[in-house]
Amino acid sequence: MPRSRDSPALGAAVPAPTVALVVDQLDWHAREMIAAFAAFGVRATPATLPSCAIETERASGLRIAGFDRLPDAVLVRSMSGGTFEAVTLRLGLLHALRELGVPVWNDARAIERCVDKSMTSFLLARAGIATPATWVTESRAAAQATVAAEAPLVLKPLFGSQGRGLKLIRRPGELPPPEQVNGVYYLQHFVAAERDGFRDFRLMVSRGRVVAAMMRHAAHWITNVKQGGRPVAAMADAETRDLALRAAAAVGADFVGVDILHGADGKPTVLEVNSMPAWSGLQKVAPVRIAAVLAGDLVAALRERARRAV
Image (cartoon, rainbow, N blue to C red):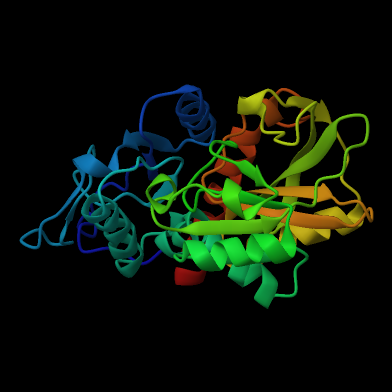
């Protein structure tokens, strides 16, 4: 692979590949990834983005916590929230790593496209991928008009995960004031269908293939495992798998969790694409070790990159 300005001099002993594992804390997911990389002979070191910095006096211009030189790759498992300025800096660090030739999974652009649900919806629709009709506005009056014409709608936080903050809106007066939605109304058609409870699918995609899938079953229309949904082993059909692969490609991600449900018409539709997916629930029913798949795919990508550079 191309050598960075922080790489060892020619003739020096080449160390084992290193990966910066971007996390908020050393949780179960982080430990799983560290062990999975170790099985491939790769040292994965946890790094929090708030502990990294841009330092232009350095050869690379960056200081990555836990590394004397740039890592060979970066895998972003989770990224904490913060002020607009702090989040901008953290994404800037990921952009800078890519500019320096360091592979970043997922890179800042893919993360930006997925964290901002309005952009995810825009890109899915532009790619012709089935997804609920969506309206996003800063105007409460415009949002109320949309509810009056299109209800029932689901109101979602623009930045949110794990099913938190979702509300089913049936009448304009049910919309909260702007300060309760951080000034943005993100509304989607309610497409869930009750069939002895509610069900949807979570598919994990890595390097252009579906590597694991589950169905989530709940009494409530919010099926996220963190909100009480029960993971069930499932085999997604070809149409659902194809939809997940197309969704991952639309946001430009190396690996994602794609949430898909079948509406009242029985057709699959993409609800969300998560560029920093958790998989503890999925792992309970998956036949493969998900961390091992992700680590193996990144290692394979590094090897292919090295062969092209020769």
